[in-house]
Image: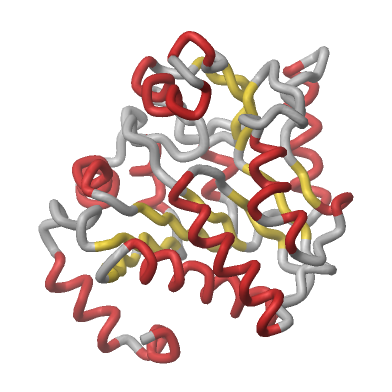
Length: 261
């Protein structure tokens, strides 16, 4: 695991977008794992800008989102399909048939989870998985006590997650109680993972995920096991990390990051 601390939210999101863009240019058929949420909006704005100004090409890539709420139509404003269409898919030249999210309206949710896993495998697996982190320490909707080998499945949301998402739904009582999510095991099979976190509200959970023990109570801590995981934070989100000096030295000195400095 590598940790990169950037001066602010925009710089952190810009770095993530540049990494994605470079990987996409190197492999136009890149299989991208995508995430949603306010933190990711800055990343998608940068990718859209690169598409229009730098001709970043999405026409041959495929995408798989981490999750979708159970019971929400794709046309509903709070569905993750709607989010992705709004913030990325409708603004770049990606083929809609190559964009994949779980079907939260599936009659057989268990079969839908198996179908989604099979689609990822058919695509050859995920090359680059973009991740956020919830206040409960989750990646995707892998809430506390999610098995570290778990696969795509239905998960009940914790009160912490429901409260965190309530403003988008207009109240806690309107937030769906379940979601389909890639499992922790599914996520860490991606060939590369990038976790983006910004703001002081994420500082404690980032410190736990990065420098704490690997535990199912903080599903993001499983990323410590990944061979190629980069955690990118702004100053606020990285404020409680103990090894900040070392992380800064790595970014300033390692040849891998020279073109991004």
